[in-house]
Length: 241
Image 1: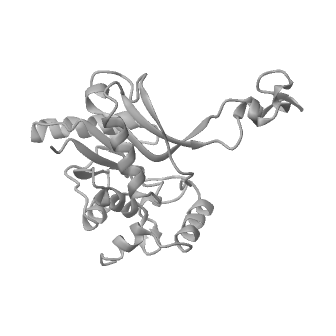
Image 2 (image 1 turned 90 degrees about the horizontal axis):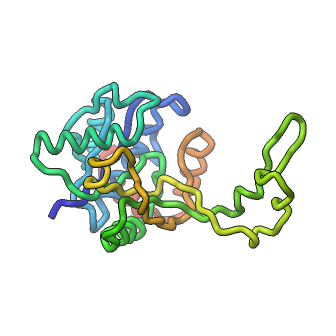
């Protein structure tokens, strides 16, 4: 039916880690791992990379993704939102192919290590929930942020302004840290609203994952790759690099 599309955003111009989206991770550009995850999924029909860079586009196509357009610079700024590049991609497909897939699987390149079965499970989860407006992944927080402290002048005080932070963690509801493992956006919702996720966001519990925002995190992910056999890396090693 071609109603499930992976969209991988990869703008150039990162300030935190220069060209991090194409930085080599065990011999392959960081973006290639998200492309591989989408290509290996049994529930994704098409893989598109949205980038403002011809260099990034060539790399993405080498690893099997489509790059049918170059994203305009005004949607590729430091302050640009996810909604902007998603709407741009949807409008482009509508204008050029006269169709817009319903399910958009948003895979951020900065979360390179994913399990294919987990991706497929997330897609099945949102498709089975007709009331849903989106899906967002998150992993369990080891401790409630309500136990954290804020600083007022030279003194610490509880977030709740009392001493509940001294209670055991079992006294607090389980909370989840949103991560970049997988987001799924429904075109029928985002095109008719100013929001991305809406009020019926499926809460999908993902494995704990590390996201690349610094060289230290990048090096740790490379260490992880070297500790176990990665299905993604095995797939990528079939490509020339």
